[in-house]
Image (cartoon, rainbow, N blue to C red; front, side):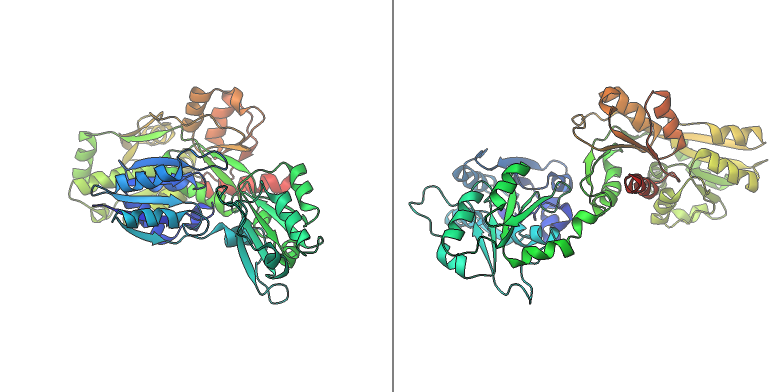
Length: 495
């Protein structure tokens, strides 16, 4: 018999998953997830894991609850680890109790992994503390959508209207007019501050504030849609002072990331930290060239080289994997100059215990040529493990000035076999290499870039885009990801 883990996925922000939750996602054989789960969490699933969408949008259930219960029991009947991934916390209006009871009746082992409920996190991201010594000492969490099969409401409306200082309604946007009217009828002042928070903790977060009497009409006029949280109480007044999330430099911006999938997450994290929503549209796959006899031969004769030039993070990773396969490590590079094209490549080298001897100020092939001028290349042998298709600026300079190059292609930059949907409703499309630009145009055409802000990592990528007839709005001052993010920030600050 397998085991089921009822895991809270948090309110939306991918980083609000617990360590335990992430650990289980990574080792699960089966993941059954809800609509409110951030789909980015599924990227952490192991290869071969079965991933099943259980739906449960408002008024549009893909799978009825009884079928989900049966599915959990069925998938756990073998020896599988089953993760039931639920938005927020499984036991806060998440039907986790119903699913756990079904498993218990079937004799199936289960664990509960609490999650950060939207009831507390979404107001926090809107700058609303649910309790405050000067404003609220009590708080109540209420469902805004009771089971329709119940004959009458079990919510004690009079006690709510005259009791807790702060009221938080989940799943109540559709019933907001009824909730506001009932609270007022039961004694709550119509002037009580209130707000609705839609898509909380995400770049799409929207907040409408008012009073209990004015909020329903304000929400209707704003046309915001579920999911949403309703907060009623004096603490809503604190939002003007404590609204931190929406003041982030890139808040609300949807930014397309076209890098290869395995290299996108660092970029995405930098965008998330600034309040943006990364939209992953990989236009490139990195495929190591295997077998690679030329590279193995070069590694066996590594001591005959005076310097190694690494022009990408991928070159570093693949080169050292081959080194490991040859039974060697960084010690064989003793006495050999290691040249890295930029900060990311330098950081990747450090993972393998290698400090770059030379890093140019300008992170391009021309930048490397400038440092080679100071180093001197005459009568020296250079090893350059690189992409199959790459510019020959460095090779030409070395050859023209009396040096010798061993240029060994070790990977190919290919179009992904699985192509994402065309980018829809994004503010910025980023390009981090000429390959990402060329492949994007090949996959989606240029028309889709019209009226989009285009951001380039550096002059070489910009040149590729301009030659294709695409106007570049943003260019990083230095060709690396942090500088590209900084350039995007500056663009919007100036706007």
